[in-house]
Image (tube, rainbow, N blue to C red; front, side, top):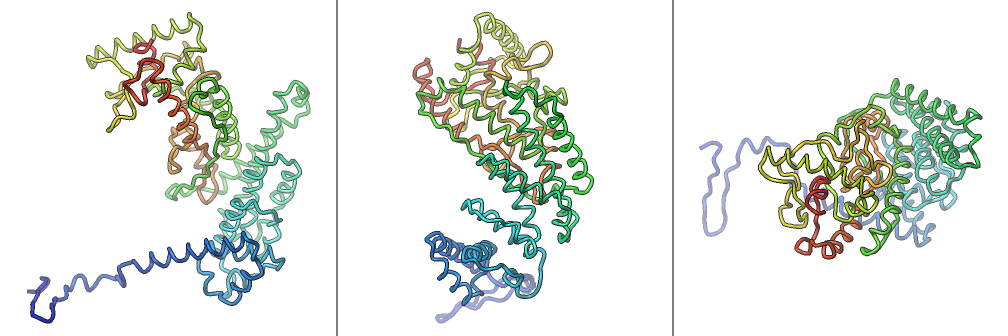
Length: 460
């Protein structure tokens, strides 16, 4: 019958009738060959990179010149170009493509080359390559204004970038309007750097006169002017995959040191967040600007024992009594609706007990009469500090529409987002939490966590 598999068995072979519908599918192989090729390319690249790092640049260059067919991935192409620079050769158009200028190939080569430069912290004026890799102006400027300046605080570096991005001719060879528009984003980023430096000076009593110079206000005006131009000329493709550029913390404390140094940890979070704001163009007080306390009224953060102890230790008896009374009222409302109280649970148990199983909504007890957080600048927990500007899995950013929209309309054409990687701090606090559980009556739990309401009412 047509369309059925017919198997005729004999001692020597098995005959299988072909299925017409399968024969029409455009499948040339199982795909395993392609996977093996990708694996081989990556393995070859790692070997080339090892040779480059070992200083065998002349032999690596000879190998590439004799085997151009092995420059078969964009990462290997970037390494080939960087090796040309290292051996003091001039990068020519035919090094990018032997078949003539290809904008997409040149763009990807420029992007991957700067990624490699970031990884190796390589020193060279990559603006020199703009004639053969026009978009290198975008990626190199981004790198200098973000990562490089963050490390060096070199003011001369800022002025070097400004001289390029303020020159419209440096963007003339870009073939796409979305690419040309990146000059406005970069100019806004430069002025955000200047504005950020101005804020730091204003915090220093020795520089209080800076406000009167007008430079501080001018920097912010220039930011706004260029952001408006950017949004006029560039419309983001919101269907594109998001690429996260993470900023890692450096503070590292043993578990028994975390509670005593939580202020220092939170200070680092603030410093990294300020850097994220500069890089991403997200407004500093987004929640306050939109007068939004939605998160604080519909949910209350889940916090660890160590963070609750830190909050409690920094409250006066009167302050603590006041928030506890608020929490008791919330518990009473929860009990009326569901017949149970919000509890501290062990987050380490299989299946993860839910600290708020009914998704109960109520205002956080630390909100004051004006819907302002009473511990915002002092002891608010990591969940509140990191919201909107961080990732814990290197894949997603938990953010409300106000933060998300700013990210989308301030990001580059490659849809990159600069974020704080909160995982190291979260892990550190988790280790401290496990230790403190045994010392504070939670020995039956490995990771005691709860809403602020349950901590204020159940654990005091």
